[in-house]
Image 1 (cartoon, each protein chain N blue to C red):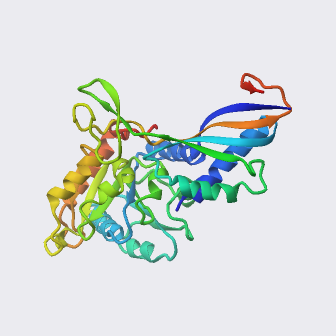
Image 2: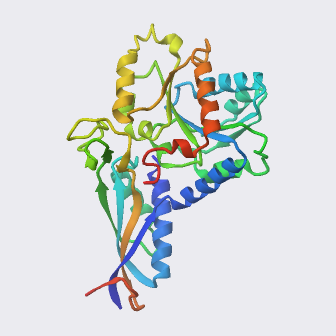
Image 3: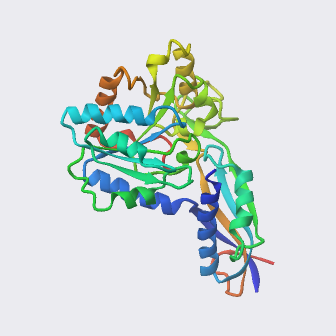
Length: 231
Length: 126
């Protein structure tokens, strides 16, 4: 009998990370740009995604979505009205999506004809930041009805994002939302992060957003490797 | 609260490694957690005691090494450690940097185990 140190140096979430890697490979092989939408509950992820799907479908762009919620398929029904194929993931109490559930909901789904796959995460600014879903783009949403300093309060998720979308811009005036303060707090935790002002209601920012998507899809995932993603 | 999921992953991984190494008991599990990993250490410690019940890791200590944030500063041409999460800019010259070099770690460093098997390449302790 001896007491000894067993060196491991293994990622605690390596099972999730390996699955995410194989999903990323599958997305790349199918030339589909996968996006992970993250935000607090109530930021308007579903309304924003609804508008995005509608705009893309209207332009004849093949697109699909997975939507995560604790319970109900309300969001999937809402999104399916756009005409795009949509699947609901119910996490039954869990606060984030994991690669395993994404993979399970993609079985028998032919991705090869798609340009974009949107994955709407569970509304939460903490837990989803630890779980790679194989996405090429992580979009973090912040609404004008939240505080401008939210990025400073949740640096982990904002730092891990590839683009920030400020939603409900039609309410910016009544909410006295200070754009400069919001931009400064995003810049503090993720220098250089692209920011797009949007409104799902008026369509503000949709052209810029769709151009951003097209550019990322054209360039492929390698051109936009997320800083620190390999840590 | 995803620390329960993380504790499950941790225990699964550590228990398998301990078993493969022929461990009869695990004294300590040492992990590294970056300050930006999004993990509450208190919650993780709480979950750890629950999740390790009836496993090889039962009654083992979880010791956590916190890894500070570091970014690469291009003008200074070196990695700079940041004192907190309030601003991703070089603490020497003030240049903003999104080039994260440390702070997202979440891994098991080592286990302290009892085993009957002869140690192979690891550090034996008396």
